Image (cartoon, rainbow, N blue to C red):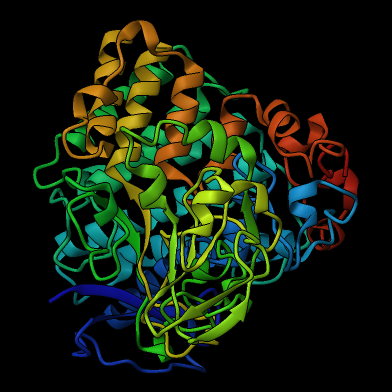
Length: 556
């Protein structure tokens, strides 16, 4: 039986605007859900209010992971994905003039993150006055809240640079705000995480699944140091500190890579030994917030092709993100040894709309006749000769036929447990931190220190797991083969579509270079200043002193 944290937006006075409720996937509640409104500010000083406050901070993670905005900020405008045919916010991929300080996603991320941060500040400040909670539990919950506050400031810093650094509760509207420096931001983020780690649950999985653990905070702090090492706040020991933290995560009893890469994202197996931290979603739509929407964006237009109609199993295809040629032809080139291409992209669609149809893209035969469950679409991932395609009783989709509507669809987020075929509210947990990422970041930190042999072995741990059965030896590389470019591509192979790539490219200082090389839609427009996002105009407008007090990022 899986314990998880799930959320429902509620109204409270003062700082708290959301609450999370703990339950179980089988529908038995650990805490009774109660919609609370009109509560005085002293509610946070009670045991019940403290717990609701902590849970409200957790709900803020759902404003980023699995959302349209979280994916657009991190998947669009990179070297691995460009825009497909449909959907809003294409300007976030193309970096054209539509992406500015008035863009909805910029405003939403800013406002939602600060709502969570202020809730965290309230819980932290008032925690000393709370009674009726065992001291050990109070300290653990306080540590969780500090870890999430650090997480939110870390995301904001990567997106915007120095922002308004508020570490105390804001109880009334204010027009006074200033931008902290990037070194000040990192100092606050690191302080929160270093204070949190000793009091967090040392087990790799807390009894209440979904809570921040020691390993999760160590993973996050390691990423912070890895990123700080290439920022204006860098210090000589950043890579060494990151290495030590990642090693501690890997040494956590119970954490282990799954033997089969395909099992990581198999629906129903989201709670597994590789998950360092997951953001919780639920089949209870009353407590699922907006849901995990990632299932929408990575799918091609299968539902209008001969023999097919839209269903829950194959997903609702928004056709938002199309893999670049670099992703398909370079990142996943080694398919005879590496299982990750075929375990990452969907290659077969089975007919759910039987009948006889004229072919429309595979002209190797004039028509096809399909029974229920027959293969309707096969995407082999290579240019199958026309004579071979003609022998197949279905349409074969080859790379030369790809366009913004037809392309390899990502398997990772497909959600067959949604309420119906139109539902946007997905129910799958979002795997925010996983152990393969820890290994790859450890290898990066070691490589940057000249520890090439150690870095190579950690890369090989991930690569051996990704091998087809019996191909483990062929997947190994030697220290002479390990370069920073190899690490960059290994992260793309392992973590495609997992809300990491934009941050990776920025950390490596190659965002503009790689987008110009591999994203033809964005190449004409991206400029050096696009390594930061625009400060939302409504934030600047509401600050006393306007742009002089709270300046906009260069270029916007």
